[in-house]
Image (cartoon, rainbow, N blue to C red; front, side, top):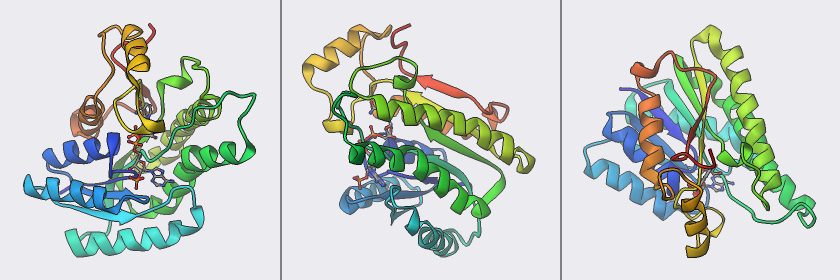
Length: 247
Ligand SMILES: NC(=O)c1ccc[n+]([C@@H]2O[C@H](COP(=O)([O-])OP(=O)(O)OC[C@H]3O[C@@H](n4cnc5c(N)ncnc54)[C@H](OP(=O)(O)O)[C@@H]3O)[C@@H](O)[C@H]2O)c1
């Protein structure tokens, strides 16, 4: 059985990615930051559906905790799957912030940097020895890196950095046949940054060719399918999942 680790799997896109992966027979290790109950609910849903999952605590903004997290992953792999390695890593966890450049504080900037760029970099580094040869890393970026959207400059800049980092991962990990791709969602109905209000949703739907905002499963299905062997030759790409947002 293939095994995936999904950071931020307790809610939103991560919860959908976890459920969609489990439906395709992939074992799931999902992480939560503060919302343990939500994570346990996702595990219960997967188990009720006949899948296998476990939840671990992880703060991706705190790289000092990554060695201990790697140990916890090792324990979960041997206890739940009798395995020493896992196959897929989805760097998904994150938070949003709306604040124009003129008023962003250094603390807000550093917080976004730690979660969206430094965290995926050093978490991947820490977990690399446990990723099986032939595995796959998926980094969650954002359509805001392509379309400048007022109020999200640091967030979008770090997502742009993560997109570049993805190509470097593909380059350096290729010798172990590990693929690396990023996916860039458009506006999806989750709790990110406090969620979408009606006015914003109408605006975004009007800017989208398919005439609506996305739902978490619009993204979860793509990620789960990207992990399959059918997609084995897709590597070092940034794939926008946005229904045709501002084209
Ligand atoms: N929704 C969109 O429109 C959209 C568009 C483009 C990109 N994205 C990206 O998609 C990813 C998921 O976002 P979402 O929309 O699903 O947001 P969400 O509904 O707010 O869920 C965020 C998830 O990330 C976890 N998380 C937050 N801060 C964390 C930290 N410091 N360490 C570890 N985990 C943390 C949360 O854990 P807890 O539940 O424990 O708090 C939760 O599982 C993010 O990287 C986001 O930037 C989203």
